[in-house]
Amino acid sequence: MHIIITKRIGQGIMLLCLDVGNTHIYGGIFENEQLSFQFRYPSKNCCTSDELGIFLKTYLKEMQISQDKISAVAYCSVVPSLEYSIRSAFIKYFSLEPFVLQAGIKTGLQIKYKNPAEVGTDRIANAIAAFHLFPQKNIIIVDLGTATSFEVISSSGAFLGGAIIPGLQMQMRALNEKTANLPPVRILKPIAALGQSTAANIQSGLYYGQRGAMREIISAITKEMFENAPPTIIGTGGFSHLFEEDNLFDAIVPDLVLQGLRIAYAKNH
Image 1 (cartoon, rainbow, N blue to C red):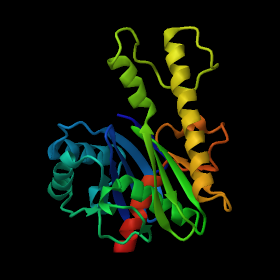
Image 2: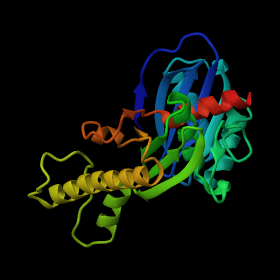
Image 3: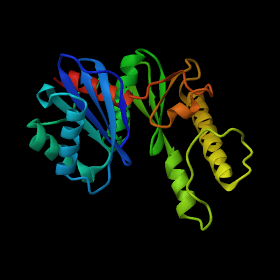
Image 4: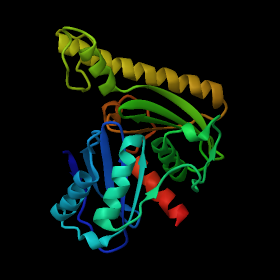
């Protein structure tokens, strides 16, 4: 379990948000508009309502947060098999009906997608937050998680679509699982492009391959959609920090999806 503590929470309305992804449940607690705590919990398929509920209660106790202070809960999910467990955990352990980011709620965006129901709700949360933080800007979001996704938003608030490629962790696992001799490696920014060990070769290929793919996709989308008004490029997701010195992003907002959940909750309450 990886926990990041940013500050001790004080008085005020507290909103517990969860982004349920394929690898982790990324969570945070807002006091009004301030994200005060962040945590991650494995989103394995056997995550039951009791496992999640007990983890959340234990986490709150360890952080010295009274459970009674959690006044609302919200989540988005790209793992349908876990949605019953998550809703049940909130009802059973918090006596709260969760707000779910899903089709039909107010987002402040126009979803210009052939089938809006196909868009991952984490991508919608990213788009909500980005448009809130950078109003009246053309935007490309690059979310480096299990997959690396690109979300494209116009200056008028239209979600136009995007692109998806395998993420760094997914690529590394594919190399390990589909070959006989390639080991799993730590994902990091290599010292040099020329690797002189098998592990260094893989690390170089992962890093520079992902960086090159991102540059190419950002360039192609910009030329296709925003040639006369260059977009603001926002990096987010667990691996975005690896590329913070590569002049890919105008801004890195690691908690973008949680901010989007908070804003969506506010718009609908």
